[in-house]
Length: 290
Ligand code: NAD
Image (cartoon, rainbow, N blue to C red; front, side):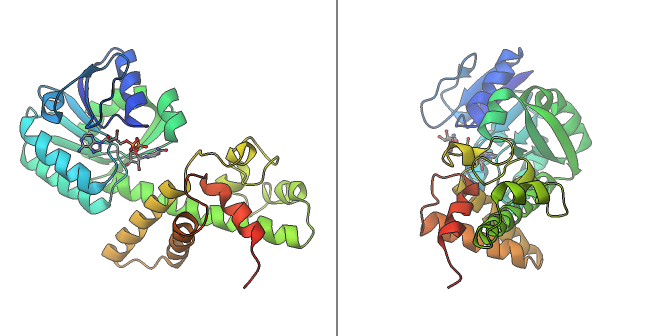
């Protein structure tokens, strides 16, 4: 397929490289000067989008997505797919989808999980919102860039799935870390704590697959000085999006709200910036109740 790829950062560059490696004709654009193996570099976003069967965007925020979409939608040919893989607010995803539809395009919102490692290895998971026709058109690209895609319903539902998943992740990581810190104070060995919880009703992905305690469970960023992995500030971004969506839809999310505030303090007032989001454990370890 002829693919335009806009936003060649930590995630976009390896995703575009994988598409090119798989034989797609990829033209990329980034406002920073970036070159990616096998990807032709365009001078403007419009040049990357013109004549493409699918235009992929991988950008930092909803505002930037809206600005880029306003630029590229008029340049795209009718019937082409506008596939946004960024993590953005549900409202921006739906607004861009409605403008794209009005211009005769097929929009999809398809945020990813799997991080930079998943982008490089081509093992991302895509959570997809949009029409069936758009999803079927983009499916070969999802199969190249990832190992799984789930069609979650109409436009915006991919972003909805992503922020609900990550709200659960933020809350369970905090619960896992505070439980380890409590276990420490009660004199319970961390290995014993892991052995019990990972096979009991407290188990979760945070405990079983990404254990925040160094030297315990499978290898995770805790075993590497909490170098991300998934940085605490990206978790904060996703939690904020979840609370923005909860406000807009009048949903009661008290634990999501508490997790957002804890990660805000961790990133903005403590030493969380640039550390993995599981570094909440050393944070709790150091603290008392007051
Ligand atoms: P990044 O900052 O590395 O890349 C974003 C790129 O967009 C940059 O290269 C920037 O120059 C470019 N850009 C910004 N404004 C632009 C514009 N107007 N026109 C063209 N290019 C522009 O970010 P990233 O880590 O690649 O993340 C991209 C998206 O993926 C974000 O929405 C993020 O939340 C999401 N995400 C990231 C991860 C991760 O682990 N990094 C995991 C899942 C999802």
